[in-house]
Image 1 (cartoon, rainbow, N blue to C red):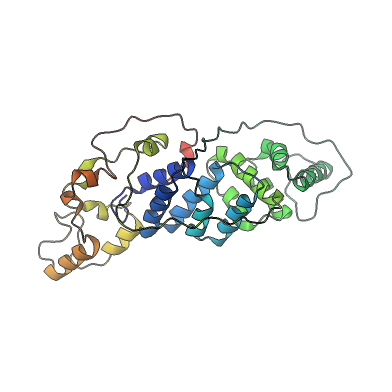
Image 2: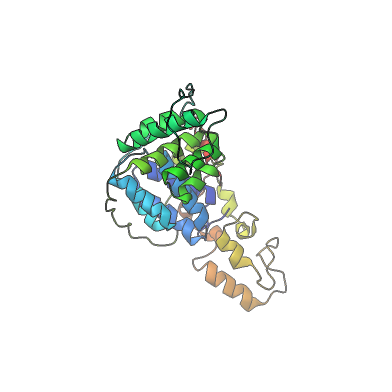
Length: 325
């Protein structure tokens, strides 16, 4: 799972989330940049989106800015809206309990023709009454009320997605709800979606990104790994020939870098067959390892990304199942 600069990909994703929620804007930006430099744009965007879902929803201009940045599919524009204030801490939210509510009573109200998929067993009058209640809540910017009314059937994704589309939610956000595999995340996404629909404030300006440089410029924290249940990357992975670049789950950067190079063989001692062209070998190492291979780094450098012994894991984070690298 090697990234461009020999962090482990899941470690960097965990550090990104940890720093977004714990007032470390510079480290969050550096971790995001490492995934970007590793040609893992889709993965980066997915974890920025998860970070957004875990932050508190609101109807402020910041929510609008995050929403508009999300629609651009621009990782760094999205990142700017998510960066925390230095030193601020956002606690991981608890799981939302899926409560039950009796269906609405019959009414003369009718839902719009654009909403055709209703909760199982509901009549047109019941769907119409919910539609009126939701629009009243959103008119008053009360996304909490709208979320409360819909949580009982939040796992009926076709119903919720069809409802969101009828309410005018952009398809990108609808797709985020529809494709979520961790069911406990659905109420969080729902709350953010209703908050977007209820937001009347104009997008607020967001600060510029910190100055970013490539290379091994940040340290993976033990807390980031343990809170997200990441297996400890050990120092032994950096010793010997840099075979991490040839692992099946190496980052897209390394897959592209190693593809089609004459004589390349990730199973060999120094990644090349014995009779490989010396110029090809030298060019590969000069391009991708300009400052020595990991084995030749100082221990201090190695310990930016890897650890001497396994870390003690914690099971206190209810969102671990949402973390899928």
